[in-house]
Amino acid sequence: MKKLSLLMLALVFGLILTACAPQEVVRTVVVTEVVEVGGEEVVQEVVVTATPEPEARELEIFHWWTAGGEREAADAMFAALAEAYPDIEVVENPVAGGGGVSHRVVLQARLSAGLPPDTWQTLGGAELKSYVDGGYLEPLDDLWEELGYADVIPGPLANAVTIDGHPYVVPLNMHIQNILYYNKALFEELGLEPPTNYEELIAVSEAIKQAYPDMAPLALGTKEKWEAAFVFDSILLELGGPEYYVSLYKGEIDVENDETFRQALERLQELLPYVYEFHSNLTWDESCGLLVSGDSAMVIMGTWAIGYFQSRGWTPGEEFGAVTFPQEPERILLFHPDTYGLAVGAPHPQTTLDWLRVVASPELQIPTDVTQGGLFARIDIDPTEFPDPIRQELQTYVRDNPGMLILDQHGSIAPFSFTQAYWDVIAGFMSDPDVDGTISAVADLFETYNVAEEAAWYTWP
Image (cartoon, rainbow, N blue to C red; front, side, top):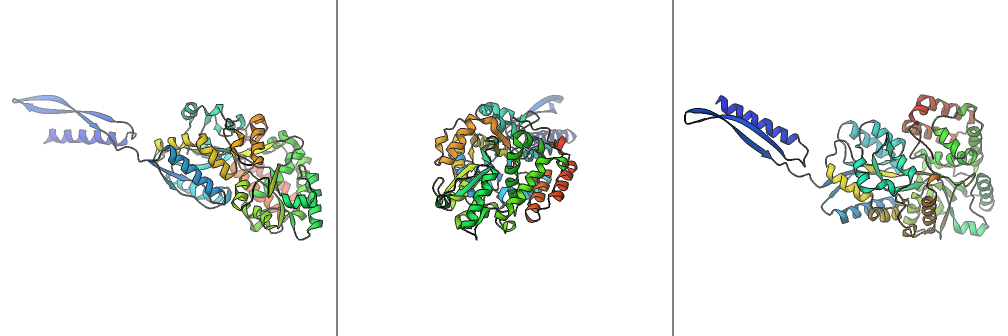
């Protein structure tokens, strides 16, 4: 009985090792036992082999694409996945909230509890870095090498998703932040040209206000705060230029004694009479809706607004036009990518890697980005795959001028904790334009969140 008990313990131990091994590995355990043969004790070995069940072909994914144009893009993503891997079942956990604000709260709770989904939507830049620093994402060096992905995307895009020398996600698009959309019929009626600098924006706003006193020339929604920072960024970029913009968000500018930052706030204050009054009640998509309803004539928003306008029946180049804003002192594109990675402890790691292979492919990026509004991450895709002249021109410009890309307020050069607090301050300025108080508050944020050290990872160009 004692010999039998030892044998059973050895077998159990071997099976435990098998169960703990990665699912794709077959574990063989050699067990020694003593048996009696012809009245003599003989030591012999028994080989125990266990093959675990194959990984379930399931993908648990978190994303925030729920607004008009976004939901359709999510459907296009999963249709591309089904075409490549029809055996994969997608389990979605979308959380409503433009820009992923609500989504991030729920996701962080899951990650902190050690219950990650397989993959989740995240922006490149400082937000991605926060997940990497938290130990929540696996590096993807081998996958990138397999796909040759660094060879087909712009260098600034690769830099935005590379932390400490390792790529951690696969970007599927590039969103441009600083775009001014306008109602073409109204501009033609009033004989206006779309503004490309601050002086022209004020002049156009005044002309619209004189013709239509009840119309707010510039739409805005600040319910989720970040929208106000978009407008402010365009003013900062024109006044300071790209080097200043990068230095500011790397914490290298003393804003309390900086004339450029003060002047930018003063310009934002000057713009307020032309901004939609009830902006604090609106989300980004609702602010775009003000153009469709005729309550506003312009809005500064990212490329995803194209998908929204299309979902409302507007055609790019017909009902609405778009220009990057500003275009002085040079044409810089503030951008961020939507990306997906592989969670540490993902329930279905091999399935997730197959998903990421599809994310990197033209077969996913073309239908998804055309639908949602972003540019292709891959610059080897023909720009004419876009049906509208707006993105054809933007994609061509990025392909020919990749060095003109700088991380924006969504991707964030500064640490994400700073950025969220900064959004609150700038959104507050839109309702209470206190220049001195805002400068003091922003200066405190740079110190509180140690931006100079935390943003040192970012380099431009």
